Length: 316
Image (cartoon, rainbow, N blue to C red; front, top):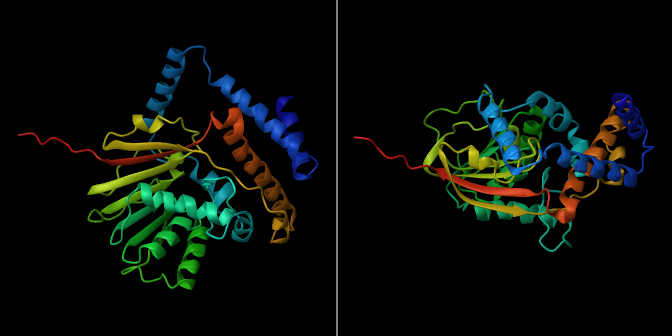
């Protein structure tokens, strides 16, 4: 009966018969339900359940979960459609609104600059952008630091095609001197050559699809992690996943998510499946925006973490 009810609700959503205010009420109810589900009655029980989950995650054979599903739902969809939903820098994930009055482009730049500052980026660095999306960070870094090399790693062939086209358009196609290059590969299986060492590794929300894995760190490397979705991580989750890393900084931030622009339907979504995808994204954006506002913004948020390789004592 419950599944039938959800199916009927989705059918109504696809037909655009459920107004925004009703969808938001449903999302808030689901947020409250989720909080009840993860509350096992005491701090001790809650911690025990969390540690059991961490133990299970560490035992997995692969570092990423549901990569094919994620591609189908988020990353291999129409690029034209995605670009109609996001800002000029093509930042698919959280932006930063310091005053709350910024337009989307300003909020994109604010967050990108925040990454550069927190990970102490300078020119002449070898940078890895894990899960590079539609290239907002990779392209931004290639332009801001022309003497550095930025490598973007993505599961999505459509993302790679788009980023390569933008890099060529902006004259950033010289990978040996000043431009990053984009690699398409499964994060579960992709391996860099052993001699390749990165000065900075940035993982923007892709970490929530990952469990810990070794990486090609240089001795003075820093790993920057920005996370929220996917695993829906707690703020201290990464503290349990750092056998080779030492946490140097962690921060929280609040952000706003702009509603899907009304003209998105006219930009390539005229077929039935396209309409369904459009309305699914409509629900997705509300499902992402409501948790940030839940309980006055004090329940869910964004975490920024900066790691460095641990210095191991040499035994004699």
